[in-house]
Amino acid sequence: MANKITAIRGMNDIFADSAEAFDYLVKTSENVLHQYGYHSIRLPLVEKTELFARSIGEVTDIVEKEMYTFADRNGDSLTLRPEGTAGCVRAVIQNGLTHNQVQKLYYTGPMFRYERPQKGRYRQFHQFGVEVFGLPEGQIDAELIILSARLWEQLGLENLELQINTLGSNEARMAYRQILVDYFSEHKEQLDEDSLRRLDSNPLRILDSKNPDMKELIEQAPKLIDHLDADCLQHFEEVKAHLDDCGIEYVVNPNLVRGLDYYNRTVFEWVTTELGAQGTVCAGGRYDGLVEQIGGKATPAVGFAMGIERLVALLMDKNLVPPQRQADIFLVLLGEKVTRPGMVLAESLREAFPQANVQMNIGGGSFKSQFKKADKSGAAYAIVLGDQEVEQQVAAVKPLREEGEQKTVAWDELVDYMQPLLNA
Ligand code: ATP
Ligand code: MG
Image (cartoon, rainbow, N blue to C red; front, side):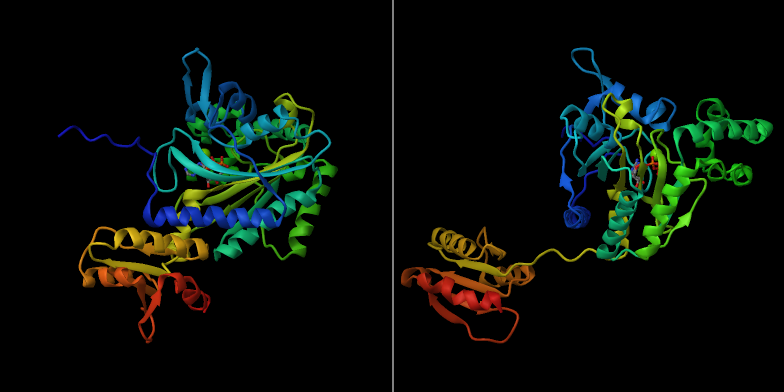
């Protein structure tokens, strides 16, 4: 036998119950987004490397060490998208979608990051992302948070904690950056290797460190919120007021800075303690500078991305995925001459009842084994076709879930006969 070829580490097949949960999550998310008037956008999986370097930031984990970058046959440097925002921003600029109009968009699909695979962290993973262009008001930041809360409610997910923070304006952040550098420089001996490196390049990211040895040092650090401009504080108050009005609970986490460079003002994360270390299931914020940074006209923007695998794991752990739709009708086909008329009958039922799930035995088998299959399919009715029925152009309809007579029905009356039964 030839060697088995296996999948790439960290790039998983998603099948059976996980695939059901995945589809259910995406459909439910789309429904909520439609309820708020958002539209779908479909984007390429591959972009020029420069797009990510310029938008995500040169000194971020993603750009420094997580991107799948390769030269195509022309020698151009391309990258498998590690996240969706950069490509979405490129698309709205390139297609002129932000000229005098607001865009409220959502997308879903795979993202790629070269990380160490573990529970909740993969190399190909999936996000459901939402982006809004053209609205500076805190109202829309709040709407994004509120609609995600509505989604958790519809999914039956409880115990997700909302953490929010504001990063202020770029100017205020630059001033704070210096204050932070001064503070950490005074305590250089307590910094780990990553943080030492970030001290010059991206000191705010030190606040994001998950190293327990640095926890206290970080807690004592000067807080960005104490160094913000009045406008940004006012904006943050507006966001919080909307959340309060709509009964959304939150925790202000002053150390929430997010891993990507492009954020300003509102940032937020939905976190669970029930998935181990990989607890953030949804994260986002405002990025007013990014459209201009990538070559568009300055446009306010805000968005978030959900981690589908982590949410799927939660839904499955908590048994929150509704069972797959079961069959309504199962055709039992017994005999030499039954397959062709059986197929035609099944099609006429599917034509007449577009909402119904009509399954059919394929591959022969005894009466008993076919009824076993019918029972397993969950069908409320079996329609039995034997050579004798074919001869007489009739079929036997047998209720499977409740007591009731088996009835012999002519083919051309079958749809009318089934109509009230299916609607019951
Ligand atoms: P983390 O701190 O967990 O690395 P991040 O800040 O890098 O997350 P984002 O870039 O904000 O993540 O992506 C949004 C969401 O996508 C995350 O909150 C998470 O749910 C999910 N996500 C990110 N990276 C992965 C991954 N490698 N595997 C699975 N899900 C991921
Ligand atoms: Mg990450």
